[in-house]
Length: 368
Image 1 (cartoon, helix red, strand yellow):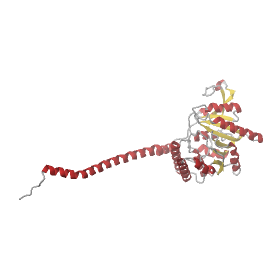
Image 2 (tube, one colour):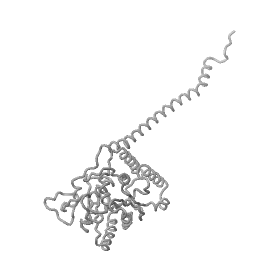
Image 3 (tube, one colour):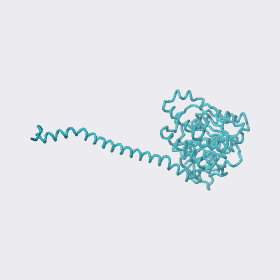
Image 4 (cartoon, one colour):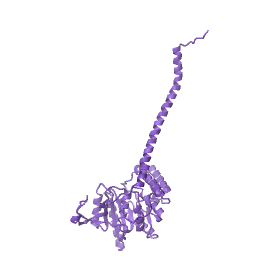
């Protein structure tokens, strides 16, 4: 006799379905999680690929194929606000169409001044007057002590959108263009591009790169000069803030200290071992060293200091670090979270381009 179940088929099917429901739910969840994970993985992969192509591979390709920014015809002359322009020169500029114009010399011509000061300036109408007043006071006092001392200041207006050029011209008018000259760039090149173009038009035996914020005490240039006495023809002396590091670390936020240490380790590993402060905007070059370095400089943004020091190690120019007095000034143009990644990329490009001999260290004695 066949045994009959005490449960009806409908009830039995329902119980079986309910018992199998957790297992089906787990399988469905596994498939959903797998789909989500796969989607997230490919999205992240696409973002990383885009960042690498746009942020590294494309800039590397441009570095291999593109040349430096070409000079505008207006960058070969400077305005003299103390002399009226001749009729043939009245091609109106954005500042004063009645100013006479004179040609800038080349760094490859013989030096006619003891020292040239190159001041890159981008939207510096507020900070520039104070810096120029302090600097010119020091230079004039030094000339009184030593009549053989001569100088010039070249203010490089890096495509500013404020009245930086007007401020510079007011100092040219007050002190004369033999002492203060304005180089106006036709567009924004970056600090490295501004310094390079100013250096290539300097007349000094010594050439000082100095920032427009007056963060470094200008009289400390004498410390740099003293260090160059051991290499009077071929040397570089750079201001260093390393001795202020302990005090600065106590005042900075933790993330800024972490970025600073990470950046220093990165720079010393890839490009400039042994230099504790590559970014201080107070560097002194002999004329021969400047003739070697600036015609072959490629980087035009913040990492240009690293390239210059890397070039020094490659071509055998001695570099000396000199402690300087420095204070942090408000109004910095550096954005940590935008400019640091760009600098990291440019430093990697510097290493790759020179190691692969794509960028040459051969000097061409001419202006670009």
